[in-house]
Image 1: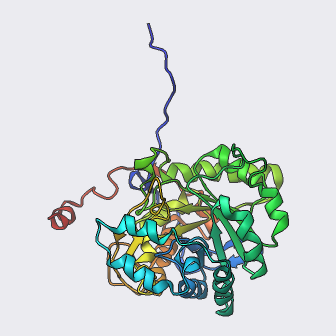
Image 2 (image 1 turned 90 degrees about the vertical axis):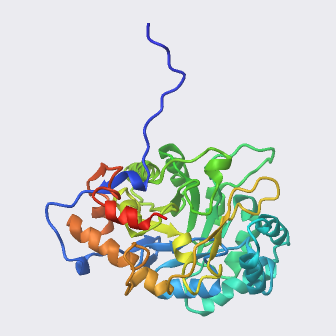
Image 3 (image 1 turned 180 degrees about the vertical axis):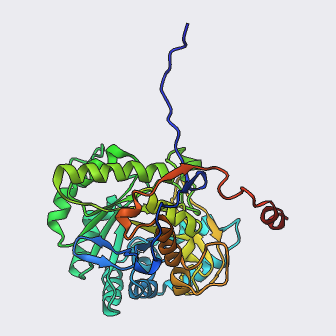
Length: 381
């Protein structure tokens, strides 16, 4: 007699378990087009710098924009709580592992200053950069008008998990169609990992969806809450939702794979899995210009009751330009991310990102270890 099943589980895959299959033809990497669009904005580099205090400040926003990408400023971080955030960032970098979580909880208990929101946005705009800002759903109604008045270009509503429908005691929660009408800029929303949640978010009229729950190097959501889906599967499911939404509406809404990438190979796999762009945290926290001073921490780390992040030491490996475009002398895929993406596209014989979505992928858990015994033995202590 067969045992009845309470629920069925399906297999899901992360970056370390899959590989991209080369195409039957190859193309010149220099001829590939990697443009990424959010409504009327076109970016020549499909990479977003995460809305994390160790990654994006006014200076990084300007630099990344000049290099063709987009950096997102966290409007609930140290940049808007302190007039001189560099002093606070230095204190975080210098704290011991034992005291850093308590320190972060204290640092982020300082109230957000609305005047600093406007000042930071105006500083980014003065540099000539496209200005993207991020807030949590709870503060969206409060901060969205301020961001709009300061003439931010792109508004991101971001939390550990974001859905189109939210149950609470509040009579009226955050309603995305109403938000869309109230501020004159594209709205990106995240994070989600499932086909149904992504499709519902797109149906609210938003301009992009962030994909990923808990994969970030400085995030401990998966350990603390036990929730998340490995990024390759999450990206593929949300890409299917994007394509279904395009079929039913005629509108293409890009998806942005957020977190979990440790090298350029992972980045290439994200695009093959269906991403239109990627959002990077720890990789860009290694830039000389990054405000984290060689450290990186999750934005749920300072939570007063249930921290879901950790501070990690990422070090400083090169300039943001080296990380994105090289030249590089490192062989671990941590620099010249754009060059690697173009080369992978060339190997697959594709000319643009949407063609890269069609590249074949295989389950390949030994892709990074097969034949690499010398590398593994030399890297072990």
